[in-house]
Image (cartoon, rainbow, N blue to C red; front, side):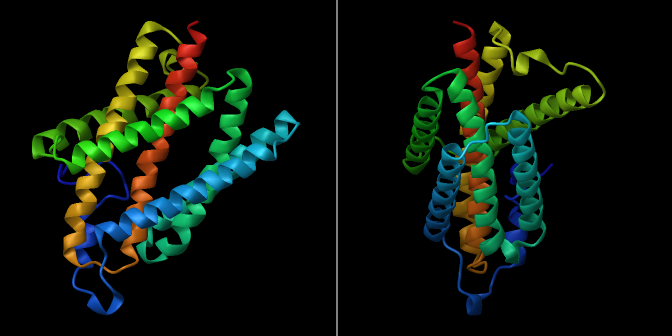
Length: 249
């Protein structure tokens, strides 16, 4: 594994380097990327609010809705990764699809644990802002060693989630600590939230580095898509952690 890269499938340095030197198309910048990230985030939030405000009363309809938009989001993510020049269109569509999914899930959890979504959103933005400041003022320095540790830890978490999914597909119960409010389950969620936060620092560093290659302007949307993947992952993990803490009361 090349640890100059990240575990984020959209953050592939080679893809940006291969497109370097395209001045006729306009050059990608870090500022432009963060601007596109803000647009994608607003689209995701808008879709989540719409989904929250328009629930389905039938549980079967909710499950169908989640399945459809999850599959659409997955398809759009693959399209963005494999056709980077489509990213100005597929990345916003992906943000909307994921917003619809997260809005529905958030409403369901908020019904069971009132106020949990506000807490999750506040904590997610607090973590994002903190990591951005720590990176901006070089309190956290993304060295090769730092990158190696975080990427390896992220890959290990992915293996755990994948193994649990396979157990469920073959009739098992999965790994209970991923959802249950046991001491180990809570510690594991804290660890995952910390790793997701550290991935943000790696993403910030990645955007700063690849913006020097002079990649086409549309790659700002592609890089913003990569940042949104990490940010939405962080929100899901924060929500999962808070759910466990509420269950433990």
